[in-house]
Image 1 (cartoon, helix red, strand yellow):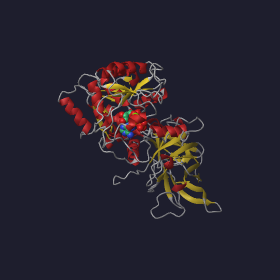
Image 2: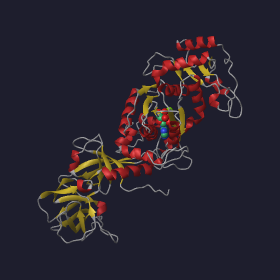
Image 3: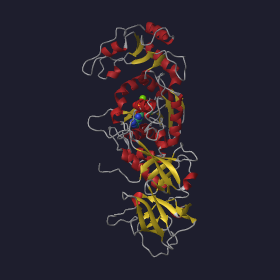
Image 4: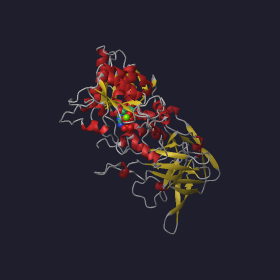
Length: 546
Ligand code: ATP
Ligand code: MG
């Protein structure tokens, strides 16, 4: 955590100082209706961050009070994504485990005259709710007796009424300036099978009623959520108070959700992409889901670092996608082994070289702990077309006719001849190896500025590389619809030549392809064909001035 405190930490520290709470207890409450995305990472970092910083606890609680959309596949993915990000929860809970508690709370409210069964349709409730400028109209069912309300509520539970025919409403204040306090619906009839409780219930609590009860029941001290819930806080406080939970009551604190340019933060739209087959699945490496980001090779440490750096605020804003990428790049620069690959190969014949040998090439430079790998070298190699110029500009330090360049970890070569086709395209280079110029034992006396990567033609392998871009094109004025911004060219599949040492890599291993970018081995690889996903380019596109 940073040195300066954010406003959530200020609240927590003041509660600890005043003795209001003795141990910080937070929770992360995902709805299991999709995979977690990078926005959720921010909430995870805050909730688990408070646990770590204040020696507290943090629960993982699945908010599965809505029976229709939820799935156990999502439950499993959420658990594994949280662990991958580096967090471990104290208790694993399901909101649906509290349906009995919630039912009892509802009965308690009815007995206190604070809830009533209404026969109004959703439409009628909406019409009578009033506006910001006009008070609502009281429900014709508002003054039912406690006995009648209890009987009707039990009958709702017992399956007597069809979906939508009756609801339980909190009896608060139809003239409240806060619309959420105008007798909100707290239970509805829904004959639906629930993934956890099966057909036990045909009434389900509404989120605004369920959530505070879950928090209070677990002893959560600080219930951290996003800004949209700010106007719901009075209702949250009303529920925990009127349901008679003991002190300290949980306190809801809102922060601004994370938005990132060109990044979809809606589970609903992400699900649509999956369902319509526009991506390879929830963990497609272009998806902003944590599983997608993981498959894309973003290290969890870099994501935590990013969340830390963007901070916590009460004002909504949008973070540049390139800032996240620069956090990833910074981490990879310090951790990823370097290997050599050539994306646009030109064959090079080393005319004065016979036989073969292995040269020792540096992996990541870690000072004294630097490791090396043996890379085969022989008469034919590939270099990248962009590293040769027939008509070089001034100060061109790569290969040119009658010029020199160093092959990384190997020799200095001299370009004797560029073979071209009838259209003038270079098809092959004929070069000679400078004697005594081998890296580490260079007695050639030549000073050569350019160092380029290369791949041995005989032993090098062809690998598949997925070049990746954002799933959304830049927002142009007025176009906010994701469908219209969908980037149909977000994945480009190319073949590259690469050194065969990569055959030892395991899925999720990350590399810097020297002078090109960072790549991660994908699980779609087979022994005959390795598949890499582009993580980020080498060059930082993030401009702090923007
Ligand atoms: P979506 O709208 O994508 O379905 P959600 O808010 O409904 O997201 P939940 O599963 O309810 O998703 O979210 C779990 C927790 O993650 C909540 O506390 C929510 O506030 C938080 N969260 C979701 N999206 C973001 C975001 N973009 N930035 C920060 N926190 C988020
Ligand atoms: Mg939600």
